[in-house]
Amino acid sequence: MRIVLVGPPGAGKGTQAVRLAEKLGVPHISTGDLFRANISRQTELGKLAKSYMDAGNLVPDEVTIAMAKDRMEQPDAENGFLLDGFPRNVSQAEALDELLRTEGITLDAVLDLEVPEDEVVKRIAGRRICRNDSSHVFHVTYSPPKQEGVCDVCGGELYQRDDDSEETVRKRLEVYHTQTEPIIDYYKAQGLVVTISSLGPVDEITRRALEALKREKAEK
Image 1 (cartoon, one colour):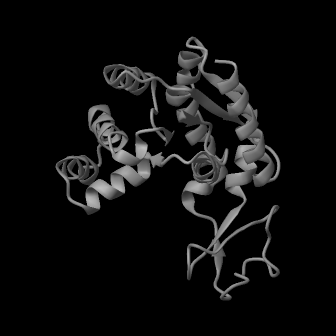
Image 2 (cartoon, rainbow, N blue to C red; image 1 turned 45 degrees about the vertical axis):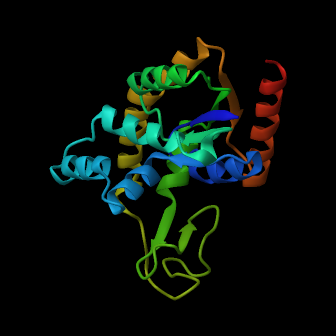
C-alpha cells in the first residue's frame, strides 16, 4: 500500500508510522530521516538543504520533494511506502500527485490521526526529559517518575524542553491548522482520507488503523 500519514503534533504519528510500516511490509519514509540521511551522506540535496538550514531559512519545497522522490524510487519502496511528514502542505501534495502520476501509480489512502487539541497540549506539555540521557522520557500524567523531577533510570534531573511548553505547543498547532490541515480537504476531494481516533493504548490505535486501511482497500 501507498499511504500518507497525517495528524497534529502529539498525535503519535512517529510511533504509529514505524508500527504500521512494519505490519504492512513497506518502508517508513520520514521527512526528518530523509534530511538527516542526505546531510550525513553529503549528497547534493543534503548540501543544498544544509545551506538553507545553516542560514536559518526554511528548506524550499522543491528540495524536500526531490529527496522524497529519490527515496520512493529505491527498490524497497517498489510495492508501497508510508510517508510521514510529507506532504506538509497543499503545494507538496500537488507535487506528490504529479510525481506519482508520472510513475503510473496512485496513493491508496491518507490516514488521518485525529486527537482533540487539549489532549495534544496535555501529551506534549506533560513530557519531561532526563538531562543526562534524552532517551529517558517521562510524562507527568501517563508515565510519571517515582520521584518528581528525578529520572528513574539514572537519577538525573528531569526538565521540560522549551518547545514542549504549552505556549509553544499551541503555536505549533496554529502552524499545523494553517499549513498542513488543508491537505486533508485536498485528499478528501479525492476520496482518500481515512480518519481514526488517536486516543487510547498504542496497540489499540495500531489495530484501529490497520482495520481502517483494510476496509479502505477492500472498498476500492
